Length: 183
Image (cartoon, rainbow, N blue to C red; front, side, top):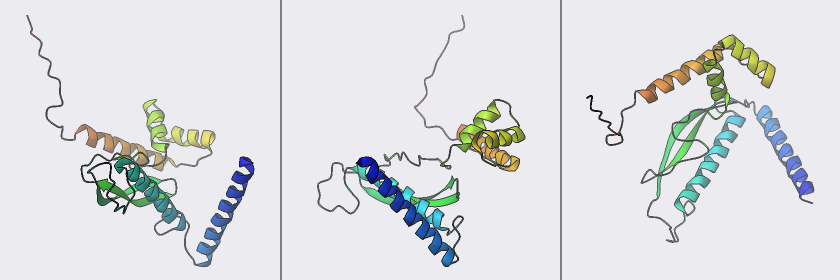
């Protein structure tokens, strides 16, 4: 019975998706890119999921004025963040809390990409493969056409982010000082 319900839901979702695509084409809208239908839909889905994470974190839903709060922490607006997805860059609004203890799971703090391409590229680069070999590997294994230039940009960005992280100011008091007597 649940399989039949799942099939009906898939059919309804496919029908809705086709309606969105047809409407976008009729209105002359693009599917991807800034203002594209898929970009806006992705933004909505991500932001909805982040708001649900914030609800769980705080213990009450947004705009709940009943006073039955589990914690004294509360929402503190949002911050904009651009994340790179498989359909291109998407600007999202990430909710914040007053005491800064909210740690989103879907889009972690300082995370800039939502696909696993960077990890794969970094792993293959660490193994000594060239940009061309990585591009060919992605094409053979995943059927994904990623240019050598894109691979280079990904590795350059990852290296840049790693350098920023390595050169970040460190918080005092978080180090174990080891003193060795040289006798």
